[in-house]
Image (cartoon, rainbow, N blue to C red; front, side, top):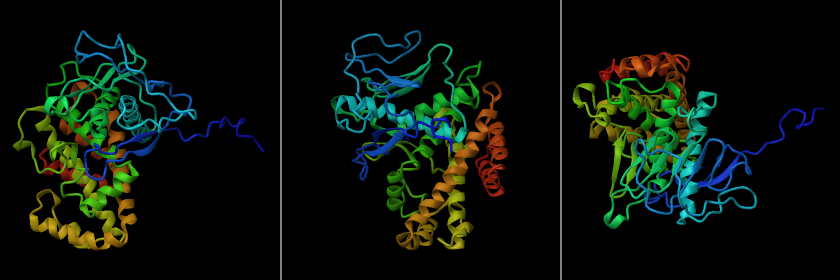
Length: 393
């Protein structure tokens, strides 16, 4: 019998452990981080943290946000790096420490990349690879913003009195959105005419939001809490459709929206909402269809138009799901996982087919519908109906 060594399978490690908050830790139910695994094996993630894909650099003095021509690498004094334990894992770093900010930012970015490389079926080559081998992560800048740029990701903080806003390095949604931009640029490039011409910018924002939303659904405890909080009704305001939740019951954007193209402005983020909404509606359509198929919800659920739902409709949706959910929550979770993977695989099939210089919402929607055909007719039909209702097609 062949040995594992002879088969080239000597490293059977599931990866390196980190602690991550599935949602910002100021949210109720998310105060404790969850243990996650990053694909890079222990011993191959060095102090920083750093590996073959990215590295953390934590400036010890005030740093201005990067802006051309001021670009990586950062040169200057830095805080002591986050160190692995004797076993090569990083899950013993104390939350609240400066080093935990570095470890959390690194692990969040790495986890998003792991998730989407799995859907894509291949490693992602950074779009800036001709200049920089690795992504530089700056976990703290005294700045009320976060940005992903050419070779870097840097994270500021929420707006807060006396500079006490929550750091974005602990906000998985925010990091996933910014890594999403880098991933998308790596898949279909940058347009020669710039980012703010036509549909490219709004499409990029929508897909970065969707990367964040779908990545959150890979936290086991996060999915459990989500379904309990909303009682299996994904249309009520919850931690899934409120993208990048902030303090004071605020969020960056809401995925569950009813905006059509005729109702938005030319501002990039506003114009992104119909596309995000169409894909989110498809996720809910597939989830609802799965529930009915498994006998977990009343089949009348499929007769409701989730895009123009009234308060009475919302109560009816909850009545169709909440009673069964109390006794069979794991089956609801299973159907949500199926819907998540169908939507994510569809996007992952479509994105590499797009080209930055001729990208329009209509071209992108057509590519997504064609890709959904590989998943099944129900997914393709739902995407088509939702894009048409949003006036994208």
